[in-house]
Structure formats: C-alpha cells, structure tokens
Length: 595
Image 1 (cartoon, rainbow, N blue to C red):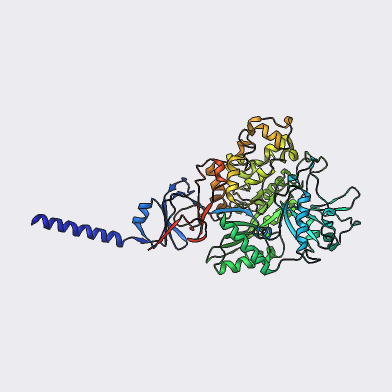
Image 2 (cartoon, helix red, strand yellow):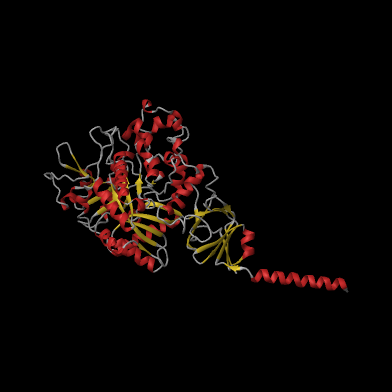
C-alpha cells in the first residue's frame, strides 16, 4: 500500500512539473526547424532552428531546445536545408531592373548584327514615332577581328528603324547607342559642334556625331525621351521586386531615385506593401535633395521598409566605355584619361552639407584618378566636421581601380568601399588591356582592402549585372567566371586580352584571376548581409540571424558554405522570408505544419 501511495505521489509531481513546463512555454508565430543556420553573428555561430514572433527573431538554437521553450501553430521543417540572412544588395538600381525586364534585353549579345535584328523585330510591333528602348549591349563581348572593339554607329539602326527613335543603353549605363531619328528629336545633326563637360559625343572620322553618347553627354538624348508614367513605373517596380525575392534579396540600396520614386516607395512602405526593404539614395543634388535638406532624412518608423538618408553622385564614367578617370592614359587608348563628371569642390561642398544635416554621401568612382578625387574631397569635408565624419559612413561606390598610396586612406578616413564582385569577373577579359600590367594590381583589390581592416558592402549593380547574389558570392570566393576561367595562365593568354609579357606572376592566375585578391566564404557572406546592413546604419536591425533582429532570411537548396564552388551557381532559393512572412517559395519539400 505504501509503495502505491509513493508511486501515486510521484506521478502527481511529474504531472505538475509537466503542467508547469507546458504552461510556461512562450508563444512564437513560427518555428523553423531541422536546418543548418549560418547566423552571421560575431562568432559565426551555426544553429538548427529559429523562433519568430511578429516581424522579429526571438530565439536561435537547437530544434529540440526551441520546440521545448516555444509553442507555435506554424512549424516549418526545412529538411536539413541551409538558412542564411536575407541578401542585401548594397548597390543596385531597382527601377532599372524593372526597365530591363520590360525593354529590349541585349545582355549577352555577341554582335552588332544580332542587336540590329532584335531592333528590327521590335519595330514590327511598334507605332511609327514610338521610342524603342533597350539595354545591355557591350562591344567588348562582340566577336570582332578588330582587337580595339570599336563602338557601333547610328547607320546600322537607321537601316531597320528609319521612323522610330532608338536608344540602347550600354550594359554599364554609361553610354548610349542611338539612331539618327533619336538624334533628330534631340536637335543633334551633322553640323552639331556641341561639347559636354564630363561627357563625350563620339564622332566619325568626318566629325559627325556617330550615334554614341558617353556619360554626361547621354542627357542630350535622354532629355527628349518620354518619361514613363506612374502606372508603368509601378508595374516595373513590381517585376523588379519579384525578381529580387526569387533570388533571396530582402534589402536593396537603391542608388539614385527621384521625387516620383520617393513618393512610390513612401506610399508602399506606409501601406506595408513594400516586399523588399529599400535604403535609397537621392540621384544628384537636384530638387529632391534640396527638399530633403529642409525636411531631413526620411525613415518609415512603423514598418521599417523604406529609408532615404543619402545622396548619390558620380565622379567619373565606366572602364568598359573608357570613361573611368585615370591618373595616366589608357593603356589601349594613349590619348585618353577618361572623364571626370563632377569636380572635387562640388563633391566636397555637398559632403560638408550632408555631414552637417545627417545625410550619407555615396560617390561613384571607378578610375584611380576619380577615387583619389573623392577621397580628397571627403578628407577636406572631414576637416570641417571631424566628429560627424567618424560615423558618417561615407562611401565610394565601385572603388574599382585604386592607386597603391590611396588604399590605406579608406580605413584612415572611415570610408566604406562598396564593391560588386561580378564586375571583376565580367571585366577581367579586357581590364588589363585598358589598365596595363602595373595598374591592374590595384583593380578589384578586395583582399588588400580587407587585410587593411576595411569591410566591403557587396552588391551587383543590377541591371548592369545579374541580380542573383549567389553569382556575386561565387565570384568573390573564386575570381572565376561561370566556366571556371581562368584556371591557369594558359586560360588568360587564350581568352583574355593579355600578352605573355603582361604576366609577371603566373601564380596569380592559378585557380582564379589575381586569385590572391579573393574573399573567404565567411567574408563573402558578410559582404552580402551584415556588412550591407552596416553600410545603411542598420546592423542592429538586420543582416544576421539573431534575437531582436528582423526575421529576414532565406532557405537555400545547397550549403553554399561547404559545397564545391561550381555548385554554388546551381543553388536555388527555396524560400524568402521578410519580417517573418514568406514572400517567395519555390520548394514543395519545405514542410509547414499548422497546429
């Protein structure tokens, strides 16, 4: 009898303990289990499960532990897949992506004739006088017996589009190819002697405009191109957002918006219908900049989906169109040192104003001369506002070609180098022919900057490059293209515009292009997540999977931190979550159980 009583008491105590435990469980809206979670916290911790309440993460740990501590009616079992923070593209053009998905897509074209054929097809479905727009051509990719890869001319387009103005943007956005009808609409004819500061109108041997307008000269044509309507823009934004979510992008630094874009973003964020977090920069010191100086930076404090607190400027053009400003002439164009599109005093003055008013400044600089000019302007402004300078997080966008004596200035001046890994692997075939065997060592120098104590917020510059961050991650850790080139010096000599006497260190090409400049996988993951968050002053809110941060995360089909590099390129985003809500789902093998 005594034993029975003892057993009964033990059962009652056990039941009471179980009741206390079960009733003391905290509630979570969602628990994700059975995962390999790369948190990207300070310790690079790896976990199994995530508990989410509302828009934020409340716990990260082992699956059993979290299910013991939290109750939820929504358990998502990802079947051992990899979870990382949502990608942050630190340099992109959202509307530009939407436009590229709507206009003629010329990326990957291999000849002028291929583009002309596409324009001819478009003419068939267009009204006479209707503008034909496209983007993505790159003369460096065209099969040509001419090693210099010259620009095309208007006459090629005139033959197929005599009654339609045509404007085709180069892949980097720093040059346009137009036909005679477009030039006529802009008042440009054979007698036009116009010169544009910070730009170039390419001319034929007889002095006539050829149909190529570079950098600031683009505005001569663009000023007469009809603007897209609000409804057209909304459709383009929607397409761009969908594309971003499908490749795991949950945040974008939109590099250059106008008043209309600002109003669209503000309305979407206030209505909580913006599916991607946007950190925007004002496009130049125009009317929106002047308006924002009066009102101050804008931030959606309710939904935290949209922030506008900076300005984007341009110091030079692009390397591919020989508009990047260099300290000495182009190796393949000895009469040319590129174009400065904004002078140092203007950049310094705007930076001083920004420092005084709490705005960030981001300046496009590709050539070594442009980078030095921007660093000089920042340094001068910092002397006027030394305290603000320390946490202003002023940025150089691209920082592609750096003089050795300027590299250390980034860390010294607290300047962020915002870089795009796929630019290196897109440009590497011809970059050395532009820069020569010496100057190339300061190009796309990620490792040098990292070893000097800098961080690199990474992006794609879409639509210049494909928006998929996995391609950028792969480029960052391999310095190779999707075919694994270069693998050796032989590859460089065969496929790149480099001669044997231009290679002074064969080891630099064993397994990648200047392979010593590559990132580790941990660095590359940080570059596309928490370092991007730092670049927008939001590292305490997002960029890693930690309690208290937004539940912005993605599920991948493969473990990009361990698989062979080539498998990264075939990894798929299975699910994209923003603020605890699933905004994109591809896989049917991610089990969500509601209780």
